[in-house]
Image (tube, rainbow, N blue to C red; front, top):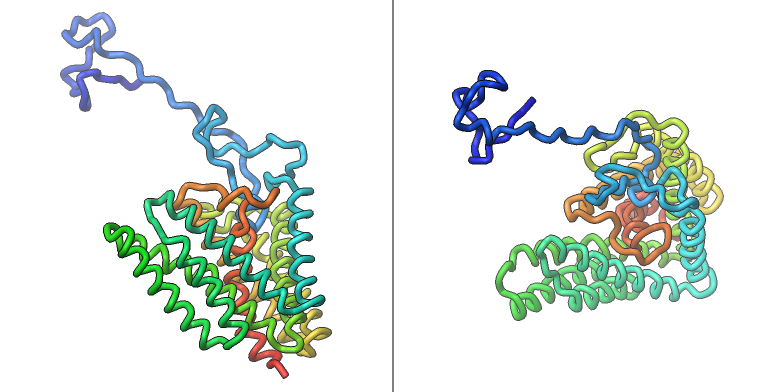
Length: 344
């Protein structure tokens, strides 16, 4: 039994009554402390490898902390609306493939639109942490980077990044000179994390077989996500990073690497004429990088105290919740494919 002293501070042994009937000048002030509610007894499954697919919904409402979402009958063990998630994912994939097959310059428009939406979501999210990254110069700079990647090549993308950061600095100094370092760090994070990394997708689409290259990276990421989800649901027992993403498991990670490696071995062999061994290596590396990217965004969202970057995509959250794995995988794939299957 613990006690509470309304006078404030910790009670001393001399203050506490020796027995319930013993007189004490403080007897009227002692009262039993309310017992804290016990934690839920259920053991959460370590199911998936995608934060948006499998994060806990941490709330402070009547339902309490750490309880899983069970509000929708269409939600699976991952805690999301699976039919909506599948429909949106297929729609996004078909949009990318159609832009590459029908008219390749349309792919630049798709990437530019993704960069704009991603920047918008990141700016909104970082404002919750007290930063004020300037939206307009970041969006303009993102479009500049994507355009330079298409028309001028990889060296020009670095120039576009420098121009974007300088424009954000000037904009912020003119608008809000205080908290300059916080806003600068936030602006640099957004400029690198979203449009700069997406620019490598534009670079990868440039060669004659660019559509195949984009298809290989997309299939590798999808297989990594799907293989990790399936392996985690049926085999997941050992949490991978419980402090960052509670439902990621080592079994799911193994499923990610295996599925991506096997699928990429076949894809690169038939589409890019690469040896199966190189394809296996490509898929395994992409799976590792995709999971790292997913964990990085999970850590960012936990620091910001948000579940999803936005509610733009039904069943997925925000666009950045879908790009988290792809953003880290795209520059890695660009480098690997340059070595494994050089263009031309």
